[in-house]
Length: 250
Image 1 (cartoon, rainbow, N blue to C red):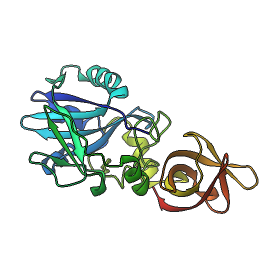
Image 2: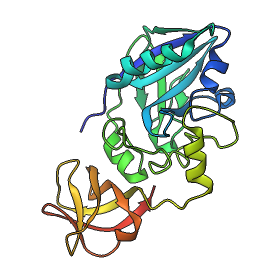
Image 3: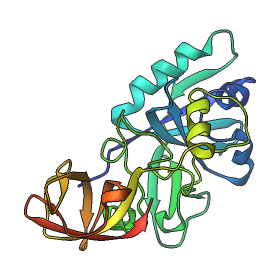
Image 4: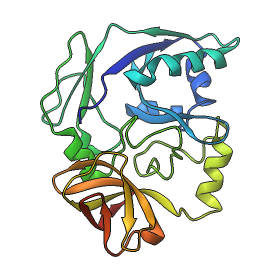
């Protein structure tokens, strides 16, 4: 299951950081430490897009999956109002890998196992098995595990360094904060063991036929699944595949 191609945009202008700070789930001050993972949410706290923001001289690079790119830029432009901010498609291309990082590369902020990313005039991929890495560490992918029904805390964004709870207001912040502080998550992504395979999106059922969750990316006898935690134990199945107790909770 190949990952989506990526689009790179350059966000410039004196208001760029403040503009993004009021919109995205993470704290723009983290850019001083390198690349940052974040999401744009709707006012109801649900996922619209996830992306990386990367400091690049006087520019902030926006690294987003191609299927979401046009819609994301359109929505950001809608919020721009009088802010002195420009958003332009970049000629830079993304290279990535998990070996020694080349000069100028940044580390993927989601997890050390996701390696490095380099923005330059060529695109190179070192052939790492990204699905295997994502499944092993329960790292969701745009358009697969991350959909318009996603709440980012159920998708593990706190563990993946994609949300900040001290930064103040942003779009969808109130719902996200309430899920963090006032409720216990009852559903979410986790890595499960799987014997066999089934299509992405297949329902996971308990032994008595109740829906326990949904199956997503699979690799090496494991899979990412969105699960009801109260139904995540005992024999489970997804079509002809057998699912067993989670190895990692998201």
